[in-house]
Length: 156
Image 1: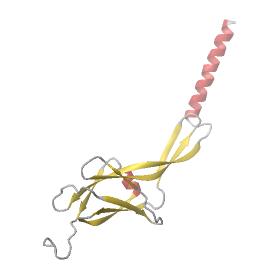
Image 2: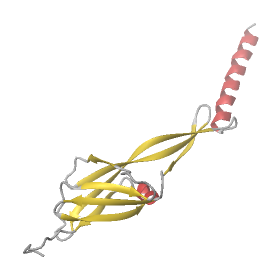
Image 3: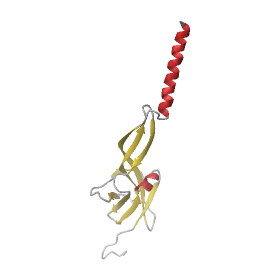
Image 4: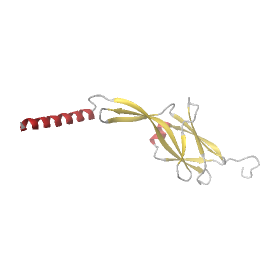
């Protein structure tokens, strides 16, 4: 009786372990799902002449084929740093128990045009490859802003 009980326990443990190992190596197949995630990118805006931080700037983002703004500005909490969030698709490949892999897919064109706006500075438009920009998401990207001169202004 005891031998049969031990045999049952060992066979259940081996079967369970075999199932987990087989699922880890995706022997039972995988399924893919897509979810929208917001990825944050930060820019430090500085004056092109003095390298002083530019405060109070706004941003707009455009992609080819889309008429609306494709990013959302948020407060970074840092002086002269503008933070934006861009929606991206995260494609996840799952087995029964494990997440096997994931990758990101840009929605729309891979070229992202970002306009940096400030009342005292010329609007700067920068073009970025979105895949390259997202691969460096942890960096703070620096953008130099040029002062805007008006007619009759002594500085221009």
